Length: 294
Length: 220
Image 1 (tube, rainbow over the protein chains, first blue to last red):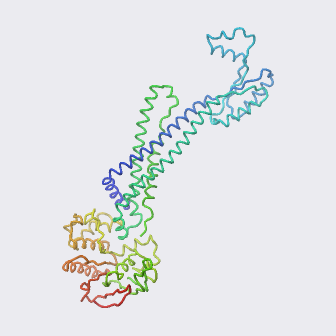
Image 2 (cartoon, rainbow over the protein chains, first blue to last red):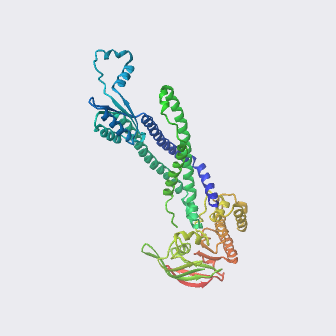
Image 3 (tube, chains in turn orange, purple):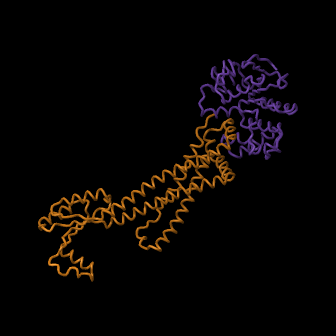
């Protein structure tokens, strides 16, 4: 604890004396961290949309006109045995026509004059939600399509593909932006601490000659980097909370349906952002102080 | 306490000290003299490990300087108080803080630091200037602050590099008397000076450096 006494005194003095450069560094860190968090939140919301969609995601397996009852039963059994399929629902030709009539309501006139039901019978399948990558779905559909008695398999392939691409881009974007911001924060803290280090060079030389250990010399700089990063992170967390809450309210006001999938900021983010700011700033400070030689 | 055995030091290809052999006993007060550029400062730097001998062996307070590791240097320096030619006082700290710095590096509690610094400032007669910044002190007073800082941690060896270089005769006398008092308490003192008046008639050993070598050893 004794090692911190002198260091804290030195740091608080430095924080006050160099308040403008410190403030600028803290703000830069908080802006950088907020940018990363914004991307993470966009990514989480996209994931939420995907998850919500995934719950209702299904495939429709249309059967051939000539399919026999035996083949139909056999196909149903095969689909039910598939561990990736959680529900198999049979829709007969008549049920399909009935549902279409209900859907069209007043426009059922178009069916007049039809001698036979043109709709095929089908199976509606519900898949496990964790299977929702386009590759897996495409493979699954292709496999079912090859089964005997199957005419065609339909699913929202374009939607799935687009949503999945957007979600993936968001995730990649978060990682790339996160990496870039962390490098930037490291550099910002590095520059700030390096300036302080040079300004105190004479004092450091004297300390070395008096017999100060490396940790005694380093500690104030690392603590200053830690405090700068932590404050930057806390400000960022507060800013994210305020801006996100305000923006969500406004968006929901105009588009109430957005509320269904809009996620709130996970509590972990409020902890992770200051921690990340602290960690990256300390790394920047360690690099800035470098190796102390006597 | 300090033992030079055939120590040679080069700066690039220029020899600064050549085959220097001498020793200072525990509790002794001795002088190193010689013209400017003779190697006095380098010799002191070797003792406090700011330089490493290129040849020969140097032992300071039981530590072999040739073999000392970087991380061990601060602990050796704590045994060696240094009075620098250029004072090396920190002008953004008060006299009290400058002296206290030598104890803060030992992680000493504030109460003990206060007691020790107050006592040492009284000894160098600067108690009344404890809260003054060094730039508001005279050269002699600044030198006394440096001595206070060097002695506050009770080192076993005290080195002084031209301690009276910029001082008038009376102030020089006061400073030298301080060194004698420190030595009388058992601290080994080695003073590097080009001023022969400082050691003349003292009865102490004097080592003469000339052409980067110990030319002779006499009694002052």
